[in-house]
Image (cartoon, rainbow, N blue to C red; front, side, top):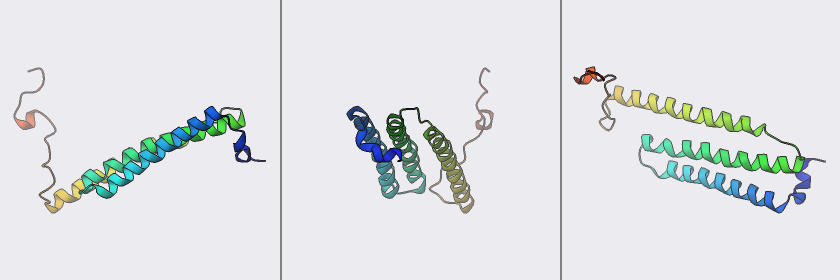
Length: 131
């Protein structure tokens, strides 16, 4: 028999914790999805699902860890790998998409894109730090 078939044996404290983390994780993911649908520009739109995905996945992974640890009566931590993978790859994907879009929009001369910032204080005509 699998662990899930014994879900009725889950203690009340664990069921409450699992429910809490599932609702929080699903709620954060929903907020990110709503932000994705409602925000007007690509640059505003890209942040909401990234945060929703990262934190929402964290809540769902925590609920899964509690559920299977309590039912299996041993620590079940391989869900941490899922959380680490999502937490690392989602922001990296955001940065790559945003930089590609910014490069494309600047190449096309889109007036809504901010001007390219100088990399150093000297390029702005200001003295370097410590001078």
